Image (cartoon, rainbow, N blue to C red; front, side, top):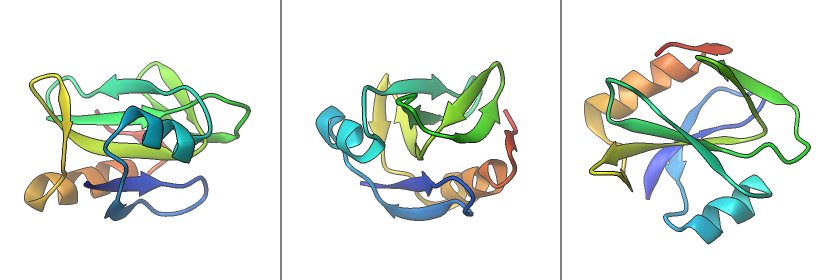
Length: 98
């Protein structure tokens, strides 16, 4: 599934991401958590398992790699077009713009 991978210390990049919980946990190295954007159809998926700080979002610190997907109807969706470009821009700084 098309989404954005944000590796610590690197610029966000559009890439193929796993579309199952097991695939996300394997890539992130542990149990996953999510942050759903309040006014944007996107979600961040991340893990806290002993990894360094990557970004800060609203009220939480996100550690290790972060995955960004589209979000609709309570489920992940591929990112494409304008939304992908908007999210690349929002995710490039340490403090993520909400």
